[in-house]
Structures are given as C-alpha cells and as structure tokens.
Image (cartoon, rainbow, N blue to C red; front, side, top):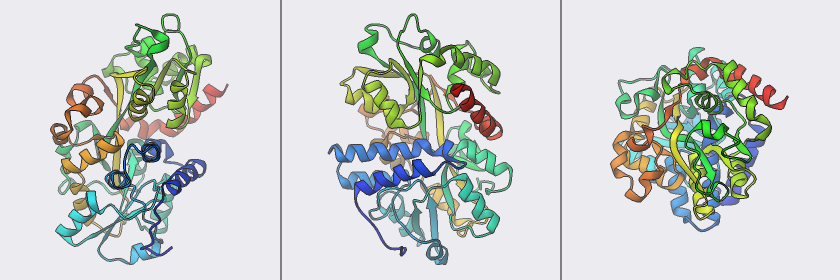
Amino acid sequence: MAGNLHISSAWLLSYLIDFAVQHGQEGGMFDNAFMKDCVELAVERLRRGEIDQRSFMLGCAALGVTPIFLDAKSAAAQAKEIVMVNWGGDALKHMNTAWGEPYTKDTGIKVVIDGTGPSEGKMKAMVDAKKVTWDVADSGSGTCLSMGQVGYLDEFDYTIVDKNKVPKAFVYKWGIANYLFSYVIAYDSGKLKDKVPKTWADYWNLKEFPGKRTMRKDVQSTMEAALLADGVPFDKIYPIDVKRAFAKIKEIKKDVIFWSAGAESQQLLREGEVTIGNIWNTRANALVKDTDGRVKYHWNQGILCPGVWVVLKGNPAGKDVYKWIASTQIPERQVVLFKLFGNGPANPAAAPLVPAELRPQDPGSPENAKLQLPIYAEWYGEHQAKVNNDFLDMIAS
C-alpha cells in the first residue's frame, strides 16, 4: 500500500488484532500482549457506543497504535521522519492530535506509525540485515533486556530523555517505560458474599474461598503470585525461585483455567466460570462495569509492569527519535491514554492531572503503586524464554 493510504473502520482493527494473535507467536509477544488487549478493549467500547470515533482515534494515537499502513521503502525514503512500530489496528488518520501534530509543529519532523507489530523476530531480522526501517518500538521490559544484551537495541540516550520522569524501577539501559499496567486480584463478590480475597495466599486458599481460579498462561505474574502466596515478601521475590513457584502452582493447577487473551479472562469472571482471577487491571475495570459491581478488584499485592520504548540499532532517524520519545513524556498526553484505555501514566507528574473519579483506577498512582510489587525486568530478560517454556510444559502435564 502507498504510505498515505488510510482505512477507517473498527471491524478492520478487530480483524488485525485477531490476525496478530493468530500469527504472532514468534519472540516478543510475551511483552506485547497487554498492548494489543488495550486496543481490543477500545474496539469493544466503540462498538457499544461508550466512546465516539474521535475519542477512539485520540486514544489510539496516545497509545501509539495509530493505524497508518505504509511500505518499508517509502518509510525509509523520508529523510525527516520518526517511524514508530506497535501492534497496529484500525486505520484512520494518524496520531497527530496526541503526539504527532505538536511534535511536528515544534520540530518539522513527521511522525509515522507502522502497525505491523514489533515482534522480537522482526526486529532482529531488520538489524541483522542492516535494513532497519523502524526507529522506536513499543515493547516490553523482558524484550528490552534480552535484545539489548545481545546488541539489537541502542543504549538509551538519557542526555535527551529524562529518566527522572518515570519510576526508577522502570528505567533500563536499553529502554524506558511509556505507560503502566498491573496484574490484580479480581473476584466475584456474588459467589464469595462478604469474603474478600485480599492476598495471593487467599487466592490459593480453596477452602475459605471455594471455586475455580484463572491466571495468565504465561510466567509473568504467575510466578510472582505463587511466591507471594507461599509467604515470600516483596523484597525477596527476585531472583525468582522457579522450583518453589512451580511447586506452588501445582497445588491448585487442577482448579485453574489458564487464559491466553484478556477477553477470555474477562469472560470467565463475567460468566461465573471462575470465582477469582489474576487479570490485567484494564479488564478488571471493564468487569466492574459489565457486572454492575458484582466483580470487584483491588491493588493489594498487584504486580506493576511497564510498557517500554526501545530504539532499534541503526534506526534511520538517529538521535532525533529520542527527542520524540521525550515529547511522549508530556503529562497531558499520557493522561489522554489513561482516560480511554486504562494504561497508567508512566510520568508521576501526570497523577494530579487525572480526574478525581478515575484516580482509583490508575495503577501507577502513589496510593495504588505502594501496594504493589514492581516487576523486575532484569530477571525476565535473562530467564523469560526458558522458564516460560518449562511453565507451559508443567501446566500441560
């Protein structure tokens, strides 16, 4: 397709998300599943009339998934562009309202979004071939560390991007947080009556809190939850004791339905198939509304995670990309993302700008963050692939 072709229908976004889920099994999907889920949630809200199309596109732009389709050659041919890759979706115009127009007005540099998906395999292939067409990718902390350590990513330029504008735990040698999300304990209050599962130990307690459970079919959050349930304090979770975590998961494995997609976790709780779930905060927020408050959640012992900007080695825009990344730290623009998708602002300066009625839903607010365990990317960067394969074998046996 030509670089200026735009397609503008919500069904196309849904189709592309489904395609990405079905075909994106190569490395890197572990870190980007949450991003795709946020876009899928937005499609659902658009179809229900909860947000209008302009708000939908504004949120997509802030999320960095503005659907512009272009071929790699036309993108590379532009001398003054920032090309950012994310997990794509519905194609309307561009991300000018949130991040593009203000930045272009200030610098004259055009911002273009490629929605074909920044899988680890694609990024490595570009760098290996020395034909990099992407400048920056919305990735995850594990991929940031694993790819950076083997030379596929730029060492982040913190002379341009201010590392003090995100929590210290989410500043990395090869990337920086762009938004926050959490894994939380959600529960069916209709089934549990006046009982509230306040901790992961309660989640594991089938006697006091009977019923099926659900957790993600992946190591992220399941390992931490298992160790917390086994009495390990926050400051001793990492490095993860894999043997101990696996043993704990085996205790309740027969009572767990493992979810692969966020929509599945939402359905399991909404339809009453499970009593308690380990799910993303964005899906938990949707469930509260879907069930008129029957399904509830809290932040206690939540597992706080970042989305992460990474810059590919040999990117065409060079240092200009860091100026654009710095512009995405502007608090007002991060609040746009949070309002429509539930991704918490990574910049603490955005917290006072969040409307009062939405602050209880912000995973990164001071009140909520202090209750949670920040994920430790360094451990995942080193162990993610092997441990995840072992985990999948364990739950399948």
